[in-house]
Length: 83
Image 1: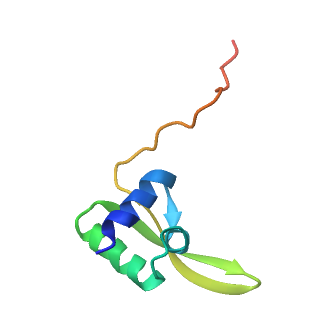
Image 2 (image 1 turned 90 degrees about the vertical axis):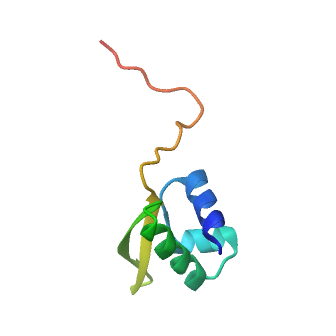
């Protein structure tokens, strides 16, 4: 149901946690996780579990990205190799 919003968010930002997607899209965390699970079944998204710590409290989550998608390079000057 919210699969399109999750995919758009991942395309815009590359790799994101489920909490970041939830904050950006306004979708509840439970709905984001179910959308990620559906997208994983179709092999559109790749994810792994993560544990982050905030104020000493362990928070379980998911880190995901679009399968086989490489975001375009950011605009601006690039460093050049010197010989």
